Image (cartoon, rainbow, N blue to C red):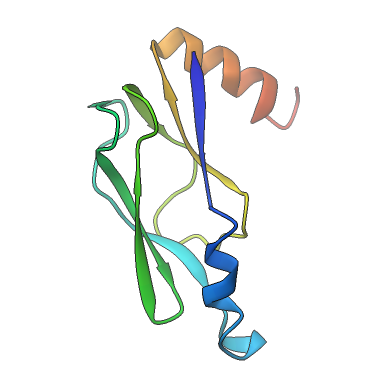
Length: 102
């Protein structure tokens, strides 16, 4: 099973409270490393939103794979990580959904 980690829509409300030119959302820290096993409800990353931060947790157990790097600007609903049962499962997901040639 593959579960994506996306920027949650509720974070858009935080960003809207500041002028458009200052709106920024990015990963400030991956708490868990790429390829590391994670447990359900374990904190995996921290997002910075303007002058606030949000901890995102794993919705399922599995192996975490980073899709977006630290400090890259993000939008609501962007896929930023994937939790899969195996590396092979992630590679198949990546080929179908993330590789530009697919």
